[in-house]
Image (tube, rainbow, N blue to C red; front, side):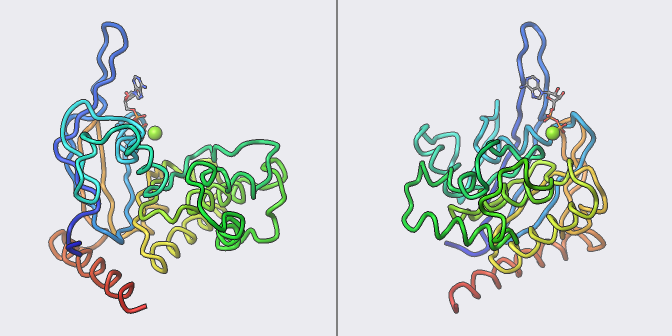
Length: 254
Ligand SMILES: Nc1ncnc2c1ncn2[C@@H]1O[C@H](COP(=O)(O)OP(=O)(O)O)[C@@H](O)[C@H]1O
Ligand SMILES: [Mg+2]
């Protein structure tokens, strides 16, 4: 694949929710490209369309209009099986509320996505994923025996277990104190830097967004700014492309 090709490309994406006679225009024509190996945050006020955008990027919801290409393929033309496969294998999700099964061990929670994909060496991979997020000594704990930050780390391990190329995280630090939130950010940064995973997350917190090279701001269903922190836009775009290319070259060498 062309190393400079975007992994995600949306063009003029709209989403209108219909509730009886009322229409809510959650997205009013959003266009953006995301390149392999980017770490970016999406910011915006409550109700501005961030979760709607994330759900579309994750193929959890379909846009009302516009085009979404993932790895160059038109998501709008995929059948349900193909969409399920994309959700399971290509994309890892992390949510604000962790979404773990209660009364179920960390290990069993992390094993859940493998039930559908039927991958080999399942248990070893799950333990490795839990070790990667620093929970190797907590694999038999249930969520109610773990702190919020630890529960979110279980959710990250679950998102990692099928080796996704993209992680989408909707306000992953929203329910955490600032110390636990910073830990979660450090894990995302490591996954991005060491494994080249493309990571997009939504946050309200400027402190958290500053950990990323690129910040997209959304307001009332529009992107109102899209630029890396402290870097002029054009220079920033070139830096992303160069970084993506470096990552791919590293992979080829290792
Ligand atoms: N399932 C839904 N049905 C109807 N309206 C919705 C639905 N989901 C979101 N909305 C509306 O769409 C707008 C954008 O919501 P959302 O994407 O959740 O915003 P954010 O994540 O930025 O807070 C809001 O006005 C919200 O009320
Ligand atoms: Mg939201």
